[in-house]
Image (cartoon, rainbow, N blue to C red; front, side):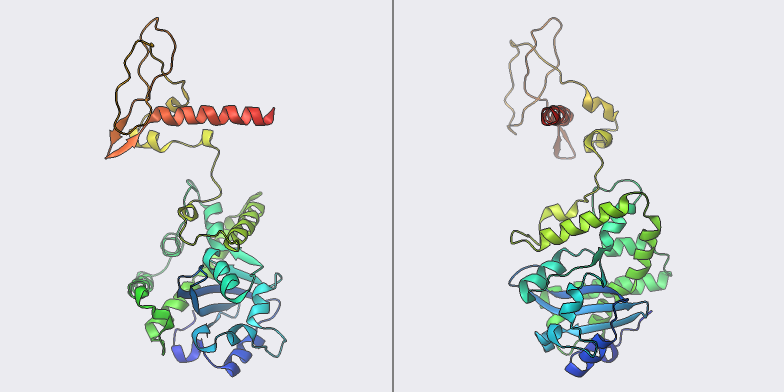
Length: 328
């Protein structure tokens, strides 16, 4: 595992940057991570580009705060620059969630990153069970890698310590302290093992789906409408069709999820509709021989949250009806 000594891994001079760029070949696989402030926004900043060259396991932190635009335009003996390497689709760049990194590179330095392998998408695609939400790097390391207790504790302690200082723009401070350097290195060192594990689990047509999802991520991140803090980024792209998924309501109520697909109950037109403070609709039970007419949905409260099983049922029916019309 690469060491995290600031004097050996931090590149803040042009000669050191030239030497490093010269070592990157077309056959190299790069693991990349960006650190800065408000990444993904036009007013954000990129302070550090962390790069692990595989299989050599060489980690370097390119100091963008010190080098400025030269960090991307300095040419090595191989004729390449960091910019050309990031844009070269033949050189694989492995990233854990490429959203903000891709957005920041384009917005701040007009770099359109290509050849991306998104490890977070690989984890989501190969995960057994529920794929509805994305997993964070810390959770993936804890769940999928068999690290020694001491190694995992040190990794977590460094992560927590630097995260607590994020509000102070810790990555822009110079000189960088060893703890911050170690944090940057730690975000990379376990990515090769995670990627190898997830690739070994990839079966069938999942590889094509992950590739498509990665392209969609890049397209979204590089669009003018991209929102770095969007809630949609929490949800995975590999959801099962609605009819095959258990409803959250069914799981909470511990009742048969197939009940959600039953037709809504109806009531007579003579029944009085109650005033519901939430303004949400409800359903009442149907009296015998009553005329068939829809009423408001019943509302139940569980753990201070409003759940309507019938609402989900009706939504499912409406979606199926809309799909039938589209097919016709």
